[in-house]
Image (cartoon, rainbow, N blue to C red; front, side, top):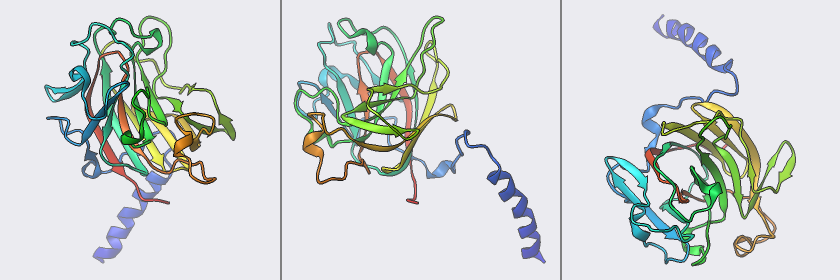
Length: 265
């Protein structure tokens, strides 16, 4: 009798879940998420700045203060095109990544206008040790994080390709960036962004739990000089890679960065 009663209770719950719409991000069990930023230091992360050798945290740009991972330019006079990235030590293939971020303060002098309130999460990135010394960005797919100000709309969780292409609605997207359908987030408010990555199959972007962009078949751009050395054989699909955080001239804070490994379909 007990087993039969439990089955009757469970069936309506299954029915509720199966009729959820496609847009809301399904909430996985909280204890399955892996915190890849420990809130105390940069353990497990390696910096790489354009023009600087691997492992050097140029001018202490990446730092941990008050439990936050900060991209800081207080030690700079000018930006000098020191585009930087902070790489997590482990590659991933099928997973979700979720981060809480905000933009603060003023952009460092000498930086390009397009980099104002601009940061990003790099997915399926090449290993940092394979980057050229002067390379601005790893070959990767970027979840572009943007902030707005004033009445103009400026979406976040866009897709930017770095030596790569993706497919949207059956068409190969060769433009550098493709906008999401997100709202504009102004000021220094915290924003939660999530990416669901299914190897070389599909990637979905979420902002505050709502799907704002999806694409398939992330792949190398064979015309890109940085991507060419990474291509082996005829298979261009990006099946896995590293996660990296940008330092692109505007101070940014992250208070949570976590990964949920997913089973392959």
